[in-house]
Image (cartoon, rainbow, N blue to C red; front, side):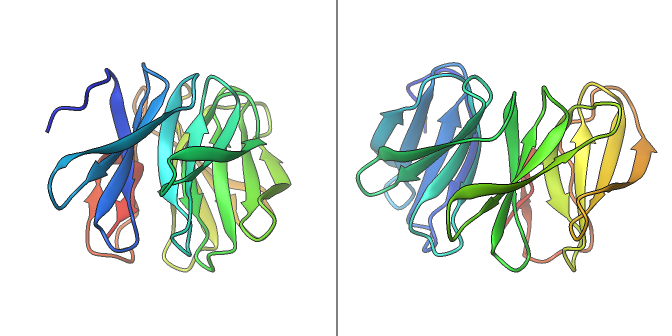
Length: 199
């Protein structure tokens, strides 16, 4: 179905799969799509450059990064309203949920860092910086959740973080402008595009 705003980008599904939220990067809008009837079911204007989308572990809210406003919008999908904004860092871009469902990892692409949001408090509880700078983009975990992998969009590098210490424990040089990544074998059935959403 057509999305009535330019820049349709990342998405995630509700817990029951009956709808999804999708960002429209060039329009500053997050849209809700009824996946049963395949029609627009609502939208909210968040401004800036909304990028990645993740549903919370309990399914009650969605988190959307915004590269233009340097943080994460928390959206109530029933009311389609922003109920909170969490500042994370310059160029907030990718999202990944920790394996124990306690934390949300946020890549801050334009400042070379990862912010760690605690779901229980909806606060940033840690920030991991890449020594010498970098451009972490999309994120993925290894199967046991001890490593967070980040594509380095402008540095032709994949960064590997320890989720226990927040330190960079590896760098893998790859081709120019690496963007999405996934990790096989992994949990779940399949990956949706480059954002690594498994269902």
